[in-house]
Length: 341
Image (tube, rainbow, N blue to C red; front, top):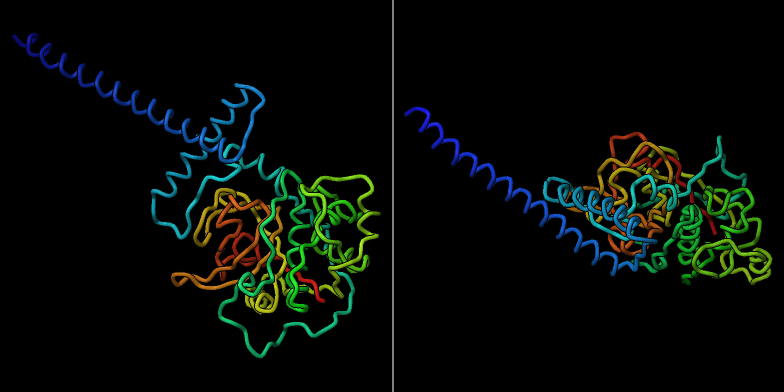
């Protein structure tokens, strides 16, 4: 009798386990199918192409891993920022950073010995509580450096365009291409440093207008652009006290400022909000601070990036201002600099 009861118990239990396994398998299939559909939509949106089916499958697995992470992060609902898919969601963090950053600082970076044309911002009479240089017409459109490690050129040009507009009330669209091809002390698409670019601009008498997009090296372009009438002229270069966000605020209240940052971790998948996440330990990227403010009681910097409009808030990021880290969030206060005009 006991054996009969045991059989009567085991059979329903097996049926339950089989049913659960079946549901789980179906759920996994639905998840894969759902993300596969999302991947196809993403491919169409961003015009992505793959060499063959094997490459597409490899990229799908990376996309799926990134998509799952983004969904899980956002579902937690306890962060000041959200993540989002973008044009790079089928790349690993390592792949992306290798091709879309490009900061290379000299071993012992020193600022050029240039006399500026006006006083620095050490003791301003008034510092605005918030500022957005976009609203003042001092920021050009978001650009995309592509698979060229020339973030340094975009950071330098954005700072230049800003100060020239502030001084002349004319927003120019200056040539990152000229910097990529012609700054001998930098390495073009293989990396460089903004201060070196500023020094080249000063010595060259300015920059030409934007030419030859996207940003690839072209024979003869240095001679072509050097012969062009110079539109973006600067008179000097200033640095901001390192690791001092108050001094950095004073500078940004007067003009856009070039900065270096760490762009690892969650930085790649940033979507919106005020970023306070992990961004790696390597200062590998350059951007331009174009404002600052406060949102929901949290102070932030507004940075202009060079990864196109699908990244972040249409190409921009709000990042924590007043971090407990000595160099600021993601090292943003480590080495700020700006041109004078």
